[in-house]
Image: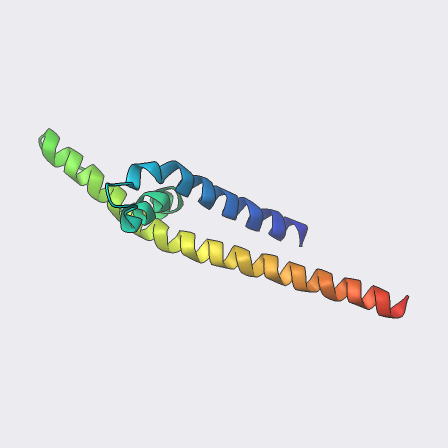
Length: 112
């Protein structure tokens, strides 16, 4: 249980750090562009989960950069969904740990 709680806390802290790093990049004149923030914060969660990388072969420099940006966009989309999933699961693990801890404390007070 301690390993699950530690993993949950680390997941939440890593997601918060990613959002904090990319938040200034997503500010425009009217406020924050949350779609851009979601894509950028999802890159660390999803870029290594991509099963297919499009390798730029036979392109000029513009085509190569375009393909690399496409790879990062797809990684950000995948990572954004995975980040939301993992943070939600982490909150559920922490809530379950809090409920189990509260039940354990209540049980000790009623029996002892």
